[in-house]
Length: 80
Image (cartoon, rainbow, N blue to C red; front, side, top):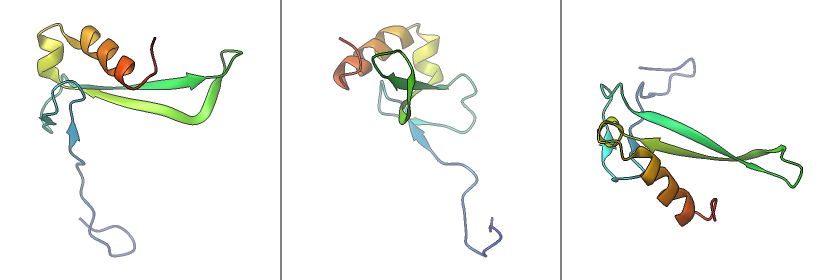
């Protein structure tokens, strides 16, 4: 597909599951992408300081998404 400038663009940008490292397929309708915002000392969002964490439907189906999210956030230093 082409945009208005005549450049070729893709309709689907593949994502990798943050927990497993596998590609999330276009037909994986159970997958989610969670945006985690960093906040200041007053609890207000810092603009532009968000982290996106994609989780595949397979991980969610196995009920491992909460443990995976906690582990990923600890590795990135966003959770103590």
